[in-house]
Length: 256
Ligand code: 6PG
Image 1 (cartoon, rainbow, N blue to C red):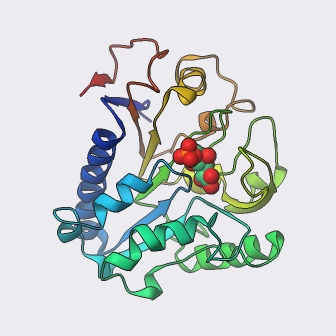
Image 2: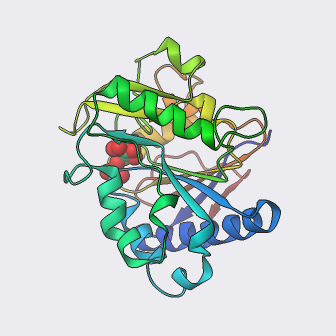
């Protein structure tokens, strides 16, 4: 298991282009090897620029939309048409612009009660199970990082014992006034992924990014430290503003 690679870009647009390129390359390999590309999206605002890039040439034309299956790393327990829905933002920014079959979108049913939404999602994950797991080996997982250090809806100093046995769980958390009731994939699902891309932008994330990557090993406080695929890669695609307090490390830290 190789350590995380860190790629620093000038700004969010440059990061988003790099992430779009990475996704196209991962997709091409997945389709060649397995005939499908299974991707889990994060929510929040950081990936919106990426979604817009994927929805237009050249990236739009380099993806075989009929063979791509979209899942989510987490979802707020709100209806799909709610402004805070992670599914809803991906639909507006991306799905409405590309020839993606609706049956390829496997959203978390945020309109249900959290426990029920998690249960239903576990069933959907099971339908895509592989490598003797009851969930897919995601070809690519997109994740963000909160200024408090959370990723997906795995929050600092919040331990859910069921995350050891289930690929998706319901959680209650709060961040920047966003909906508190959530459903999230767990490290069980993340750590069987083939590629994890963390997208982190902005000065307000610098402290959390440095703590996760250069600080002491404390996965309880820093949930992103729990994400290290057993047979997969982790790449941190960050901008200079988020990287201001990162220790310069010759292994894997490359400026772009
Ligand atoms: C969510 C996300 C969450 C997000 C971080 C960063 O549902 O909110 O999945 O984990 O990635 O909170 O959010 P921003 O990109 O908005 O900073």
